[in-house]
Length: 452
Image (cartoon, rainbow, N blue to C red; front, side, top):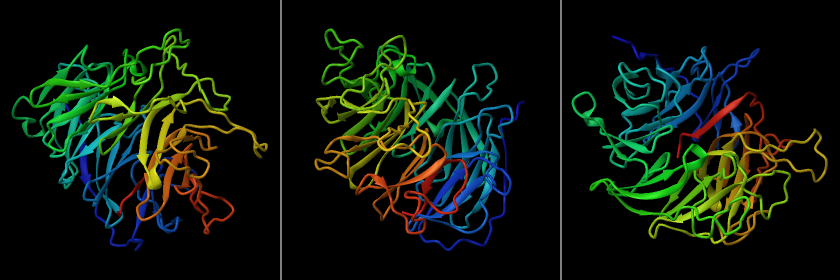
């Protein structure tokens, strides 16, 4: 017998900040008087709440808010031998940890049931007796305990359907998708597989039709060690492929290889808005390395990524010209106010400058803004891209309800963007530092709004 996890509950504090509209931000370092934990922000006036951070492990990072907004799940783990791999359940009303448990490894994907009672956690390195590591842990949020496990080798990402009756699991270096039936875990055949080579190509995500009969599956392709990115419409009732967005068709004589109009070049992350899917990725066409030219941009970067707009009703690419964004591995995307699409990546081409930055010098990191509107917004042209002058990986993006701002965690710092101008917001509480919050110091990872 092997213990995979342990859990405990902690009493909730009766003292709260009294703030009506809050955001939580994770700080993963402790130094001097600075403590790692979850800080509370007033997201209507961009102020940090007074008081200590909520304790949530040694290195709190990724957060997930339950659908009913009552709880926030915080994962602490950095993939080293000293990693605590702790999942903390924060009660949003009491602003305190309501429970915690130790996972059998690092996770980058957590989904929650529609009724907010159960969390499903992908742990690709979870030890499993008699087979390769990898499992989806089932966690009862009321008791902070593991109540079941579905063994799926190397499962890295999860997607849950609208009813919560199915969870799809996506494993590294695999062309199959695991279809997990939560109600069958522990009592029957809870895991079956669909797809395979020739159907999917390193799938990483899925989106569901309103009746859950269809999944739109995003395959990462070459960027994830496969061959060709794709978006495919898959009927989950008949277990058949319905339609596919055209795969990359190389333009004649192009060097490096570029895709012809109407085909999908790359995709590691996607966002669906109605019948429109926005897909971001970096095409690695030459020797497995990114070689997408930054056509139309004035930049010192030698490679860029691409944003592709897909009409899911017709399974066709909408944009007739390449939409150039930063390179890197894209894994964050959010549609903010005023039609502004924020796209975040990590390990992109960084262009840094000395401080103070020379006038006119380029500064570039892993954040791209796409203006979905047919009119200009600030310096972003209609249906055009703006690369903000900020360095660092993007680890958190959160549009703020009731306002025209978006919180972005980039390079360990929180930036506040004004969606009406696509620049850092002027904060009267910290007028000398646009886009910043006074007295907010740390190495920040993720940010979530919990009242909307």
